[in-house]
Amino acid sequence: MRRVGHCLIILMALFFALPGTAQEVLRIDHAEAVRADWSAEMPPEQGWESVALRDLWETRWPDHDGVVWYRVRWQQSDASRPVGLLLDYTCLAAAVFLNGQPIDRDVSLVEPLSRKWHVPRYYMVPPALLREGQNELLVRVSGLVAYQPAFGTVSVGDPLVLRGQYERERFARRDMQIFDAAVGLVLAAMIGIFWLLRPQDTLYGWYALSAVFGRLYDWNFIASSPWPFRTTDGWQAFIAAVFVASAATHTIFLLRFSERRWPRFERALLALAGVVMVLALLLPHGMGPLRNLYVTPTILFLYVVSAVFVVFAVRSGRRDYQVLAACISVPLLVSLHDLGVYMGWYGGVSYLGSFTSPVMLLGMGFVLAYRFAQTMKRVEGFNSELQREVQAATGTLADTLNKQHALALAHSRAGERLQLVRDLHDGFGGTLVGAITRLQQAPDETSRAEIVALLKDMRDDLRLVIDTTAQEQADLATLIAPLRHRASRLLEAADIDAYWQVHGLEGLQLGPGRSLDLLRLLQEALTNVFKHSRASRVDVHLRRTGDRLELRVHDDGVGLSGMASTAGQARVGGAGMASMRHRAQRLGAELRITGVSDGKGTALELDLPLAA
Image 1 (cartoon, rainbow, N blue to C red):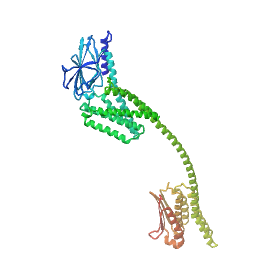
Image 2 (image 1 turned 180 degrees about the vertical axis):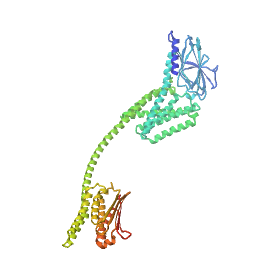
Image 3 (image 1 turned 90 degrees about the vertical axis):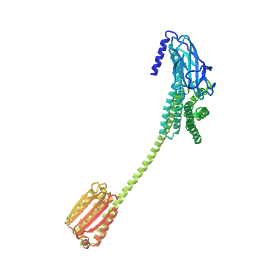
């Protein structure tokens, strides 16, 4: 809407200016001034003094806080067309009257004062307000002597020319400040996020903090009132303290950027900035008017720090240092102009520091990109080196694993051979030795049937070894089947009925060694039933329950005492029993052999933990 209004004003000016020629612009740099108190609604009649514009009344009335009226007069030859009126500078707040008619007034002309000092004032005056001949402009300026109250030059003439001049000045003094604050906040947020993602890079955190303080200071050129402070002193004290904080954090950033750590110096800077901020909030009426006592040394300190960094960066030879030094040098040189404006060394009123924000934006963007690229190069180099080391380690590990695999395979084969030898020795070997001994001790008329029985025992032992070795990955149910078949045929030959109950053995693998021990133990138990029990029935129960395997062999024969009297203690309670107990011990199982409660038969029970 404001832009539309500006366009309409320009069009009206063009309309009234045609078909005549363009009006000249009169720049007025002299006026009359008179002091008044805060409550003055109209200027006094007496006491007017001639002054040159721009007028800083602190030099003429150094103790005056209040109102100064300025009277400007000019001759208007043609009052039939609108004219432009441009007031270059009014600090801090003002009311404007033309030929006795009010044309502008700030919201507050007493404390807390409005703050419209940072922009010029432009008016397109209609013919109704103009007079042929002399015209009088009255400007009521409210200000505090500690903050450079002043009134600038007045320009009257062609609306188009003055409108263009106003737009340029407004752009330089206010719009660029807003742009500068926005750019600075975006840059601070971006670098602050970078710091949050990499807290170890503290220099980015310090830059973000210094940028935030800098943008708070920039608000001094944008704010239209001292809110949230109740007085201009409070606002000025706070802004000055923010400037000190910005200088302290910026110095720490430069130190960290230069890879320097001066803890005591950094703590001293932060402590000083903290003290200034506390005093500004607690004692605004002292810290505001006296701000130059600590702001001026801070400005000089910043110049020294920046100059030292520039020299250091040039000597370092590092590209990121030099780029940042160049980006600092541009604002540093421009700040000399702004310092002259602030100190009143010459008549300028526009601060140009905001125009350097794009330079700092590009500079910090380059620094971030450069450091990121350098980091990526280091990461890529590290990855390449790591890949080479991993490949070398992988090759070494592969060779080691191949050697270990070959050794493990050789050990496995040797173990298998050793296990086969042990099985042959413990089972088949024992049977063979026993058979040889019995044949040697047997009388010459030993029957053919007895010799065949011995050979069958040897054959059964050999089959157990072959079954468990040839079917290394077979489950227990598969290994039990051949033994069950042979044992059932053997028992049937002795008129012994065998009843088998096998549950839960599918998929159960004990390994070759344990499987062979279990099968030999079961074979020995059934052989005892066949040879010594004189039973008519034997029940074999083999069941998996949870993580345990239960084996029970129960016959209805003569029992342990009967077998002992029949076959002799050496056979029943000696070698055979010892063999079974030895195998149970190797299996980690509990073996119990007891007589049945009614005095008939024998019960063998084996409780085998599968996890052993």
